[in-house]
Amino acid sequence: MKEFICSTIERDVILKCIRDRKRLDCRTIDATRPVNIEFRSHPGYVSVTLGQTHVIAQASCRITKPKEARASEGNIRIHLDMSKIPLINLENWKHQEFVQELNGILEQNIRQSNCIDLESLCINAGELVWSIKVDLIVLNNCGNILDCANIAILCSLYHYRLPEVSRGSDIRVYSSIERRPRPLRILHFPINVLFAFFIEGRFTLIDPHCDEERFMDGFVSISMNQHKEICGLHMGGKLGLKREQVELCKKLAFNKVLELTDRIRQVVLDYYKKIEPISHSQPSIVRIDNHGDDEDEEEHISDSEDVVLTKSEIPPSPIDDNISLLQMPEMNRLSITDDDQTAILTHNDNSTSDNENDDEQRNQ
Image (cartoon, rainbow, N blue to C red; front, side):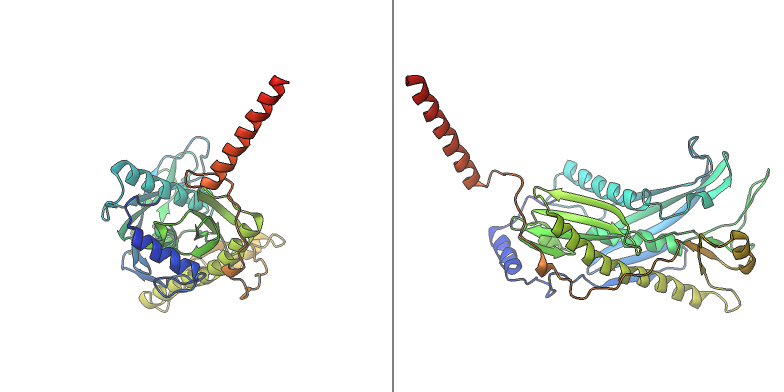
């Protein structure tokens, strides 16, 4: 959502830089800002910065009753708070609409993509399940809050540890001293990549800055995992896209997804290597083989190990370094706005010519 207050000089400078394939922060059009991930002592608490955009996330859990339709599945909720950085140039109702739009996209990327095994959150089927909640607080907005918040959610869930529970008639939640907490079963990482379109769609940028977001004509948000599966696709603005444009955005987004997926896994593993004793085993990745027996796999896994389930291994696609937004084809404007005077004039000329033809036929 664009802010409605902007100067003409600022608009001309930014659009001129975009026409010259340059950006104000000295990036190329297909380069993203650096990502910094920091963890705190409490599990699930993470601080993520994308450039100067700063988001913190905190995961928590509580025991609730499951839904009747899904008696053996837990649930996950996401709450986005942007009250710390009120958008001055937006009205109050537009600010709330902007927050709700971002929160809806994040929930769809995480919940509907089935990135977490919800059945592993079940305590007693039909009676008690775990409910995971991730609270997000935006501390600074310098553009592309969506990608920064998405990374913060995935890091918080991967870093979080769920307390052990004794199943049966008497439910008891053990502390971290009594029993070692277990990680969540994450199946894949749906990472979001945002593309912005300018000047009737003729120019495309990745990871737009806050100054660039104010003048973009439309955007495309692609959520993808390391298996090249599309987990979410959102479009905004008044522009229509060609198939070639979407395919090029998908290829470039896949390269960014592979980099961030490896980065998130490595950062979390390095964190637990530092704080946990050497005698404790680190979280191990168990790949599900459809051709093997589940019983044989369980024998090789000790009870003291933390298990993180992933999908069956898919041959990784090679990263194409030749992909660039400079290959983006030109976009056709599928919608007519008030600024398009040429389309209005042609429409008026056609209407007047039709009226003259009708009058001649009536006179004859």
